[in-house]
Image (cartoon, rainbow, N blue to C red; front, side):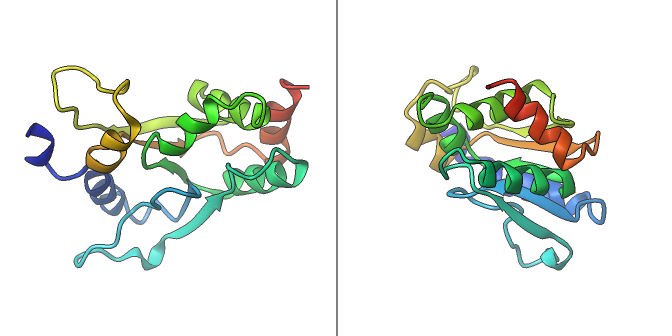
Length: 165
């Protein structure tokens, strides 16, 4: 019941994003998942541009040119659950470059740092090993990465692609 006493983590993250305005202008997010911040009655999302990363597309040069361009121009990259990246990380054959992208992101090698993490675990410990659907719908961990280094698109692509080939 603990997870239902607090606001959903996506709502908590959305409130945080609105509270940091006007610093947040461009937010990248994964396709196939919720773009944050969520609209609320008291929010003004008109100052935010959302850019979708096509992470489920096949690993091609075109895909990574788009991802790298988007990341170089974005202020934040918001992951609103583990739904997308978790399914990609177990598909090494289909997504070797995308897996490298996530590993580099999580390690801070793309110029982004983890600014905020919103979790609401039902226990005193993580339930990250629980069924993905339980966590993604009721209390997804939300990760907000800030673009601190402002790497060029070319530098981001070199970092992702060079290490795999």
